[in-house]
Image 1 (tube, rainbow, N blue to C red):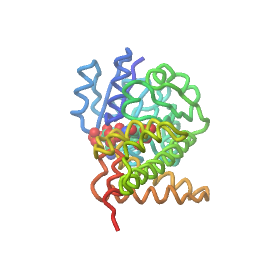
Image 2: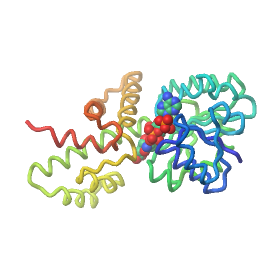
Image 3: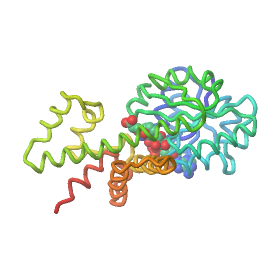
Image 4: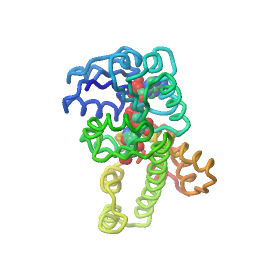
Amino acid sequence: MEIGFLGLGIMGKAMSMNLLKNGFKVTVWNRTLSKCNELVEFGASIGETPAQVVKKCKLTIAMLSDPAATRSVVFDKDGVLEQIGSGKGYIDMSTVDPETSSKISEAITSKGGAFLEAPVSGSKQPAETGQLVILAAGDKELYEEAIPAFDVLGKKSFFLGQIGNGAKMKLVVNMIMGSVMNAFSEGLVLSERSGLNPHDLLQVLDLGGIANPMFRGKGPAMLKSNHSPAFPLKHQQKDMRLALALGDENAVSMPVAAAANESFKKARSMGFGDLDFSAVYEILKTTKD
Ligand SMILES: NC(=O)C1=CN([C@@H]2O[C@H](COP(=O)(O)OP(=O)(O)OC[C@H]3O[C@@H](n4cnc5c(N)ncnc54)[C@H](OP(=O)(O)O)[C@@H]3O)[C@@H](O)[C@H]2O)C=CC1
Ligand SMILES: O=CCCC(=O)O
């Protein structure tokens, strides 16, 4: 199957590379076109615009930064809408809000195309090793058609029903993750400031009921102030913002998430947006009375 792939950032590059390595023909496009070259070395073709990619491929996947980017790639000149139509499918795997996803769905289906939202849980390494968790919703037939690709990209796919449910699930998961990252960072700083060895804290956490891959994977690097980006902080803050908006719409009080969002905003304002979201630790570490 020939697959189109739009967006070769941290995630898109790893995911499209994985598809290539597993025998799919892939045509790639990225706003900064030079980022396509590395994929070409592994057998990818280049489309010069999103419209060109959709024209060539029956199925096109997008993995873009945020709602503005996903809307632009669909609705702007040379965008997806110019070539989508009957017999073609478009799958947006970016993390966006349900409203953005619905608008894109309406536009694609009104031209006769099929649409699936399919954001993912899992970061750079799971993307490289095909261990993502896929949270799909929308066109069930397109979901079935995409399963061979999803089986390469992920360890488990969920079909969650109507458009918006994939986006909501992803935002809830990342709202929890962002809040936990703040609590974890506060714990690391508190252990250090109160005279404990934070490496001991990591070991204690790992043996108890709240042990998890995030503490295990990121903790040692955080203590060295290594925040090499797997999941950029600016995207985590975007997800907190979108999750808080979902909370507003549903009258759900979320004071913990709101406080976490403030920390991520502060970290962005200090220039940490392109670092890993673990860099929120740095703002807590530098705050003294
Ligand atoms: N990194 C992670 O761990 C995870 C990320 N996600 C989500 O996946 C998506 C991608 O994340 P990630 O790969 O980390 O992000 P990156 O910041 O690494 O990449 C963003 C991509 O979006 C493109 N882009 C940005 N703005 C525009 C625009 N206006 N028009 C066209 N293209 C645009 C960039 O193009 P260019 O190269 O030209 O800048 C790039 O290809 C996000 O929604 C994120 O929340 C989901 C799970 C995990
Ligand atoms: O959206 C990003 C998720 C990152 C992760 O699951 O580690």
